[in-house]
Image 1 (tube, rainbow, N blue to C red):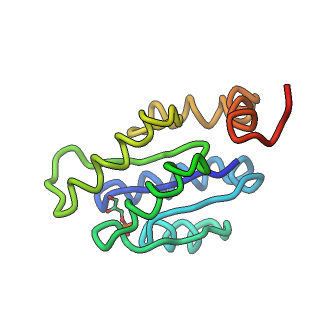
Image 2 (cartoon, rainbow, N blue to C red; image 1 turned 60 degrees about the vertical axis):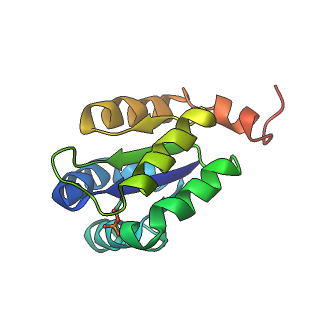
Image 3 (spheres, rainbow, N blue to C red; image 1 turned 45 degrees about the horizontal axis):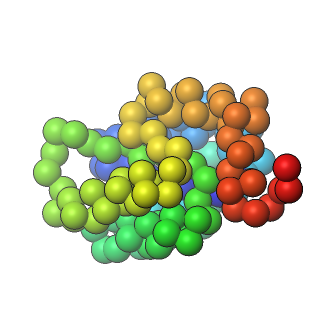
Length: 136
Ligand SMILES: O=C(CO)COP(=O)(O)O
């Protein structure tokens, strides 16, 4: 599965703790991230992460482009709801595309926990069908 990990600055510690806690699960998948989030995850966990631009410099849009090509299976985007972001339109566009393409999206740790456990159990295997990888 292709998984995107994104976190605003005040949520960086949370995404590092989360990716550390679920490293064994994440290591079985292909990881993508915005620039700074990806670097911090790689440094903290040793996981391999394909990094895009930093969010304010277009990283959210790059991940959005993969969602629009139906190539993303799960998005964990720990948003900071208490701080204005200069690239708020990009953030909204990414979230919108998840809804357009029915891509599972967690915007907080509570939902991220549920999705990652579901991923491990196979609850997201329908994504392989949606991407045309598996015939069922
Ligand atoms: O701003 C972001 C998402 O909107 C995250 O970008 P960075 O991972 O580069 O900090």
